[in-house]
Figure 1: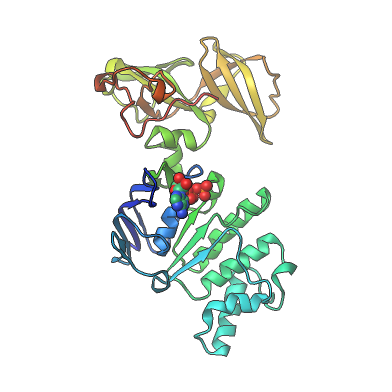
Figure 2 (figure 1 turned 120 degrees about the vertical axis):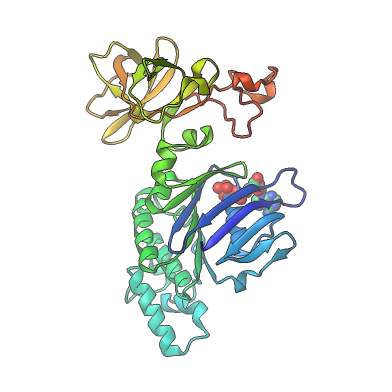
Length: 386
Ligand SMILES: Nc1ncnc2c1ncn2[C@@H]1O[C@H](COP(=O)(O)OP(=O)(O)OP(=O)(O)O)[C@@H](O)[C@H]1O
């Protein structure tokens, strides 16, 4: 394992809560890890600690099995062989591209330095641009120069903090794919921070979802989407809702009663006894709900968002339950219209029934494990109402 974080805690002086708490993860050499999560969840703090720019208050950071950070010990950034790319590129405006890229190579003889600069510029698709100045380049090109500069000294680990956030949305996704190819060609091990999940999916081999300083899941994109470990991950990744459901067993088969009908023959379904009275919440993704004019269940369109090839509809059932559905954009229904829907779910994701009180501070109910109430569960997240 190349990078290992073990039960990492980072506490800023004067702050009542840790910025990072109990985070453990492993990153293999040659893999690209991505940290995503809402603003303030601790992504940058974690990245800075890996760089050696932030001391840790508990746990350990290991690089190639060597402890580089633990409470009371922070190996300095310059001895960690780490390269960094920031969102603002931080290129020197008075230096041409060649000198910018060669900045960390002063220990090399001139000819070798020039060769390495040419090599990495070629790698990032800017071969022959060494005599140009940063102001003569587009934002995407400047970011590629920054990447070339970070890769030039052949760091053991590359850290990228929101590297695409200054770029417009189209360029961001294209550059994310390009950067992945560049990092793979350079056989680099990298850890990247972003708050954009499409970017994370485009670039990461393994993705970590953080919230309030904790790492909820460290997994590949498919598993995050299809097997979210916590309600927070289920809510943060993709579009969907949690809906109340009851599990029951009929002739050895598990049936899942939901407001949109009974699901049967679903994979990965727990036994009803996993929940008090078989009552749980089921995650219904927008792609689990299919528009079907002939379906007996009808729902009212209360919001719609055009996504090019499809609409993302927010729907309300007669019972008041909300659902989301991806519907091909030639089905352009009006707000307020009732459309037929059915659930097409091949595997179910279940969670303990959420507390009916949305605001934990207002909740007066005594918690009871038997009730599967999640008030006391640190992973508890309120049901999302859209
Ligand atoms: N130098 C600091 N001193 C005290 N608290 C800090 C400091 N830097 C960050 N924090 C706090 O630590 C928590 C995590 O911040 P961090 O910048 O790591 O989050 P983030 O996930 O990177 O957020 P963003 O996506 O907005 O950049 C936040 O509550 C933040 O206010």
